[in-house]
Image 1 (tube, rainbow, N blue to C red):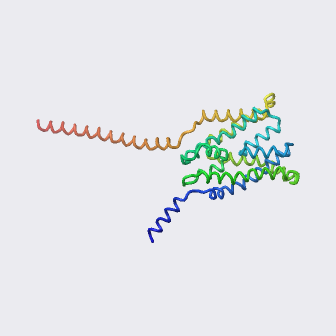
Image 2 (tube, rainbow, N blue to C red):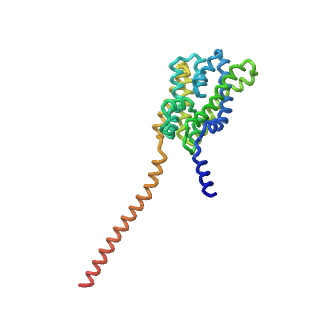
Image 3 (cartoon, one colour):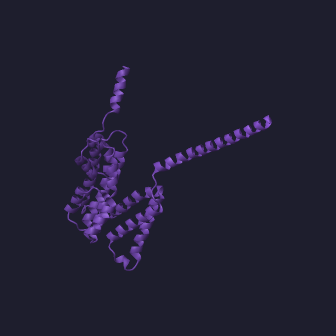
Length: 287
């Protein structure tokens, strides 16, 4: 009986993460994405874009902040170069997130599957996937991403189709959702890190400078985003460079060891001096 229970527990612990497990964990993300992408669909349609434009954007892209910024710049008449640079700066973090998850994947998962997972990598998906203590599997990761992707595309479709049905007051209220999303992303990080807070303050100052300074306010939004983001990041990287927590821990561990070695060295020196003095006293007494 005891052996059976032992093997049962071992089998339960070794159970692999499945597609179903991932899909269930992705449902809360799906619901959150639906409301945000609903505002994206409304924004695109209110800007005069055809129905297929927001749908194709959400179908081929999976980046809330990048899509909002891209559509906003497109509606303001920005150039392709401005839109490309801005979206690249916003989405470059997904490269790092995908690399982090890739290190936890089994080696047998091929490049094609890894690229597919990279497409579905978002901040929320990364948080759910990376938090798993068990060995990650391709079906599990795709389950999380499928669930959230359905919410994102479904919300875009609903917003685009229901644009003429939803009341104007509700449409206007949903229009500020992008700003709420920015605040929700930035505020927690700014509270925990002075470097992030510094980046935010410098970026806001640069944006205000370009907004209210004559001649500078003629520069389009896209290039202002690029300049503010790059300058603020470089300035804070020089002022407050990132320090690895592991290095700090190692340094803090080395300091007590160095102090102990110093104390031992001083004790040994004192012992040698005492022994020499004793020998001198003994020699004097014999004379």
